[in-house]
Image 1 (spheres, rainbow, N blue to C red):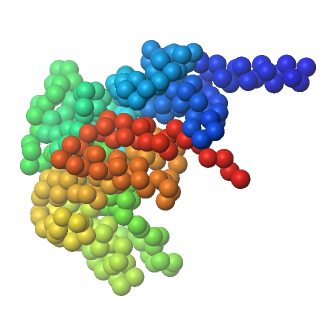
Image 2: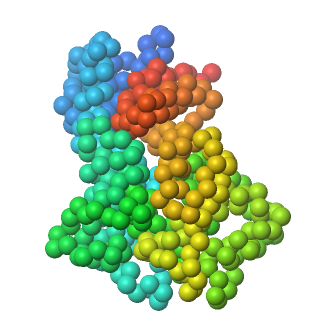
Image 3: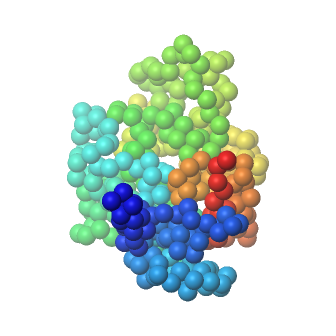
Length: 370
């Protein structure tokens, strides 16, 4: 009976349609056997078994038997709706976009941010991502530098445009809107209940968008920003973070927050805060490309998202999401190749980066723990 039960469990776990799969069967060199490798590719890139993408687990060599076949298989998987859906989920997770019922915007301060508006802004970002990432070879610029978005009637007031009868692709003011980082769902996901919470927005950029090291605030430091009537949020933050123990981290945090001060807590463009003119100027010198000095959020975003630091961080975030772990020193070669392929010639090929990851030798190898 124990042997029969073990056989039954093994058959179930290795069945092509089962949600989990055995992917530790390797040859003498540590390379996954063809069936396990095929499943590893489809589950990693598309969260689906091979059969859901038109591939057969019963004849894996037909899909991976040669380098040309393996490349064609990767292309087929990456072009599938399942893979593009997963890529959309990656961006939503990376950007930390909240679901409509998870926003913390205070109704007492922003009564116009109704549940219908919250749902509309999230739907906008999801539709935008699906549209841009559904292209045969989506580029990062398609997301970070777009001046159009799919806007519906409930949220039109946030953009200052006429409400469309149905969700529609609308041209936006290129001096105010510049891609995914200026969409209300992304901005509001990193706002506070009553303010834009510029420090929170800045920390998000430092950690998730630029992968810059950032420690915890020193013990005993009061991190609250006083409510000071007649002063902008930027002015209040600048006063608090000018303390000696705060300057080091906030030299990186503040510029990313300050460049977003033209966007209020729900993502509307504004020119004043507390009746005082907005100052969105920044000056940074931590990019390899050189200093960035501008008072335009669009110019700031253009400089940051075209930087090598941003592109290297994107490679790391993509790697972490698809492998389900943080990178180690042994992953440096594949990360370097992902970045190189992405950055060379300003290719910015997002799917190509995944192709590089899935085609790497380490992706299909397993080393036993002694």
